[in-house]
Amino acid sequence: MIGIDGGGTSTRCVAATLTGEIVGRGHGAGANVLTSADPGGSLRAALRAALAGTPPARVAGGVFALAGADSVRERAEALAEAAWADCGLPGRPAVVSDLAAAFSGATEEPSGAVLIAGTGAVGAKIVDREVTRRIDGHGWILGDAGSGVWIGRHAVQAVLASLEGRAAGTELLTAVATLPGAPADPTTGQIIALVHAGLDTSGPAWLGRLAPAVETAARAGDTAALGIVEEAARHLVATAHAVGLGTGPLVLAGSLLTEPTLLAAEVRAYLPDTPTLPARDSAAGAAALALHTFGAAASAHRRLIG
Image (cartoon, rainbow, N blue to C red; front, side, top):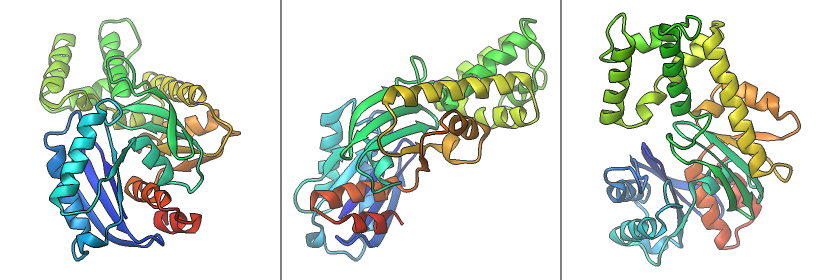
């Protein structure tokens, strides 16, 4: 069985037996069907690496969990099917939400919820291993509340407010001043120009690079940074509640929630009665979803995600 997790920055592939033993892994560049430069090429590279030494005829099926697939289903399916055929594999793979794979990569439970906070932010309700409700994930202009980009945008706003006398001073000015291309003592106009230049060359993820600086400043007691972290946590918890909690575990995914950040600690503190699990291996989660289509036992799922 094949499982692929195609995200914005990287693609990971797992080849596994029907009993849940991993026999191959492969990697490729980003495969977000909306934003990646060559998602099809990334899928083929990851597939071929994972299948090295495995005859194509032995592959029973596969699941592709692709970022952006919910928005452009036909394009996602066409890319997956083309990569599958180019690798000489029989049949057709299934395409699912990356949210479902993130959940199944952390637990063998069929139902629960998943909350992701990395570059973007989104939550989903999972019922029988399928996404039945999705909250936020609307992009950095309209949503993604509590995400890395959201945090970075609010950090810049706090610095501008401080420079203009609308708020107290903040150590976040130092973080902005150390961004590539920033002058040592930037003015508000220079900061605005710097941000727009970064967005033009690298997209909204450019703002996300300020998230670690906010974490550092918050740990040092900076009032503005602490306020940003607290507000981000409240937004993410609101997303989790809107998804619907109470049946099954809540899987926390994305670097802001799986690493030992203040944000992750605050989110868990706001949800004391909700069992949480850290995300683990979404590619293995996609392979587990493929296993279930063949009626595999729960023990195979547990073995696969380790």
